Length: 165
Image 1 (cartoon, rainbow, N blue to C red):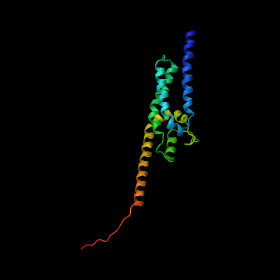
Image 2: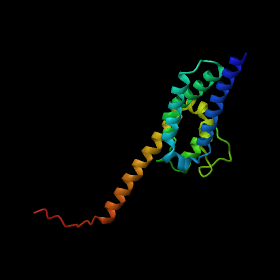
Image 3: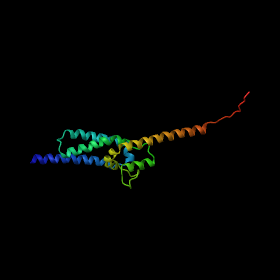
Image 4: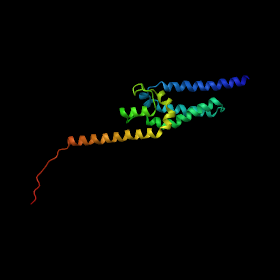
């Protein structure tokens, strides 16, 4: 009986440690976290996956491994959600795709909001990829237009009459 209690305590201790560490990430604002903490989150779930592989596969460990698997599936999508090429309308579209609460804006978006949306994110992966590709394509077009605008401003045309003789 004592061994079972110790096992249960150790297992729930793992759960508690995992949850506390995850909550530290979740507090972060996405605009700052996407640049500095993004890769630390990947290290977090890889570390926990290795830790949990060494444990007996009880209900709690299986649950945590499922969470980690979800994070691994969402990882490339989170990378697309960094929004480096996003404009305001892209962010609005992303929030709609992820079914985030109406009061969430880019300024108050937390990493927790994205983590909570990972199941939706995984289901809507194609839409997120398309949105990211569209935003990147629009950046390319804007850059080309700006280059053309600069060229037009700096180019001087000299017209001469054509002599047909």
